Amino acid sequence: MDPDFTYTLDEKDLYMFFGNSSSYDDNSTYLCCPDPPCTFYNIQAFEEIFLPLFYTLIFILGLCGNVMVLVVLLRAKESLPGTDVFILNLAVADVLLVMTLPFWAVQAVYHWIFGSALCKMVGGIFKINFYASILFLVCISFDRYLSIVYVTRMYNRNKTTLILFSSLAVWVLCFLFTVPDFIFLDSRFDSRQNATFCSLNFASRSARQWKIGLRIFNLVVAFFLPLVAMVYCYIRVIITLLHSKGFQKHKALKVILAVVVVFFLCWTPYHLVQFVDNLIDLEVLQEDCKQESRVDIAETITTSLGFFHCCLNPLLYAFVGIKFRNRFLRLLKEVGCVSDQFLKRHARMASHGRDSTWSESTEASYTGL
Figure 1 (cartoon, rainbow, N blue to C red):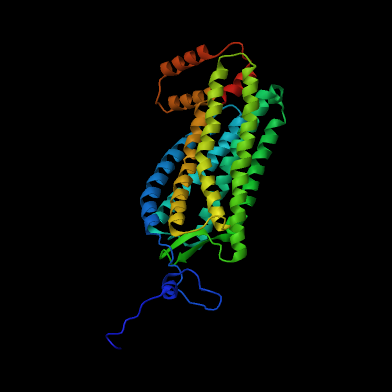
Figure 2: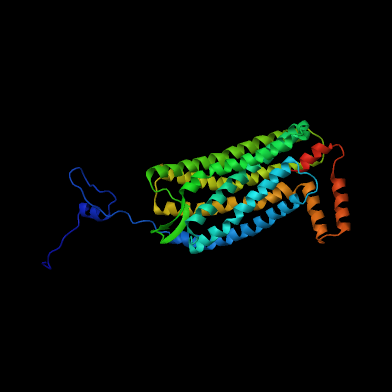
């Protein structure tokens, strides 16, 4: 080649090397290099640190709190009322859910090393109890609504059978909700991340439609409808409490507000991120590497925040109740952690705090809050 020969790149040449379209004009077609795949190093580095620490915290707190609820309720000498049966099932669901977290923590550091069979099993157990944990919150809200707004229904002899049937129906429903997860869950090697992951795999176009459909279903069934049901039930409960007389109602109102606010704060960010991810899949929002990275990190954080709700359930639904605290203190007395004097002093303080104008049935319902 002549060393004095020079060649100036024109607009078409620049477009050929750097353009994102395969065509330049109506008469000429240029082959160009596709966009390089997005890198996941930043996301992986973040998850390797964040997920093991946060999942370990949730695992310890959630396991200790919910196991304590199970021990106290199962050792109760008297028969459990409806709300306590639902709280018992809620604790079982939360325990099984947090038991899967160590697997996801290991995946964040070492990737999935447990095989496809355990991937489906762990993922299925996780999703069943994810739905069960939320649906039993709705059952607790509805039971309190019936017990407080319609007090006369509390002593219905058929209520125990109905509660047991309702609990069984919730578990069956949660299993049916999880069937698509059993179908699409698999451990596969991701060449872009050079690692194996246990996740929902939507390879074909029809399967990707399943992905969007499952997210919408998850948004409606696991968040929107439960939130509407809880808000309705507790608004009716609050109206009833405001028209009643008694000291306990002020505490009950605070607990009701805490229940709804905590549920909303824990799960709203997660479902908002899922909604944004759906808009990207539907190509309503433009996808690029930076946006994908931000969505992935936001999904990791908000998912962990939602799991943290399992740690708060024992505090909101069990330990705030007078009857449960009394059972807990009696259990501590049996194992030698508290004395008889402390137990009697606590009983006197509790009796002074009660309002004598409340009936036994109404008080049982309100103190269960």
